[in-house]
Length: 300
Image (tube, rainbow, N blue to C red; front, side, top):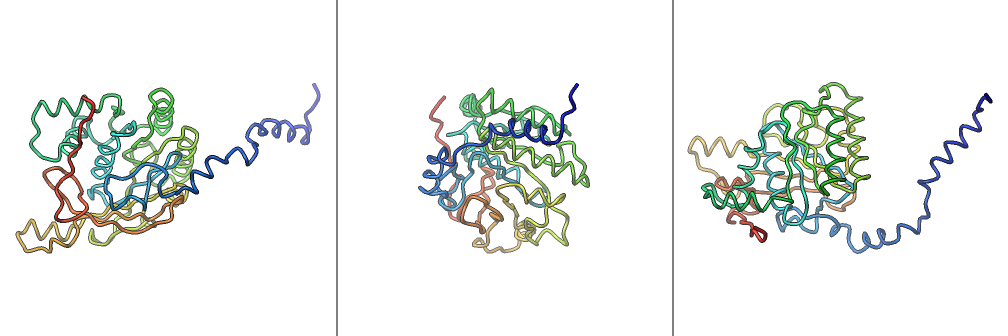
């Protein structure tokens, strides 16, 4: 058997990699699309004041971070409830039972707390063919998560996947190498399947809950925010909530929640959006005087 020398090996690898070398001209349509407005490329968030500033683009990964209990999953659920009008979504909520996830989403879609049984059925029928649930609780190994994403995209045509949360993907909180590898593979999955992946992550504990965290406060390896395309930080106004619970006067012009766009690789805007909480619908609304948004179920 002839021994393969290094030069032969390099030629062999080069032949394999040649399939990925294409003419720059092949990307003309995509370039034109982006010149028509990168801020108008991708899916909108539910609130009009965010339009033109931030989008959820295909082939990207977004990390949603914040202090535990500050509404990361809730605001993502509202975004999903809005998004199913246009796209197919899958939720892998590894910390909450599917019934609890959908109970909250039905309230967000209905825009109220007391929802009649008939309307619940209409909402659930509306989600058929638009929304899927990955029915697993507790820790799931990262290889299974990646396999699930591949199947969802290839077989179901899913366009958005929510993974809630990183700490439930079978990787230790101090296992930085495997965290980096998992984030890298999520980015690869988003690009290869042309979908948007939403990953919920936590931040390190600070002095108190009143300080709004940033992308440098994310618990785990730095690549969690370095490798992904977008970083969103959700932070509730706990000081205002405490005053309300004690019956003290509060300034209603003071927001209940902030959503910080801390990174947007393919956008041109970063900054902070202010929101107020509509308790009965579990929605975040764009202004203190606004009513809850109510969806029109156009397909029963």
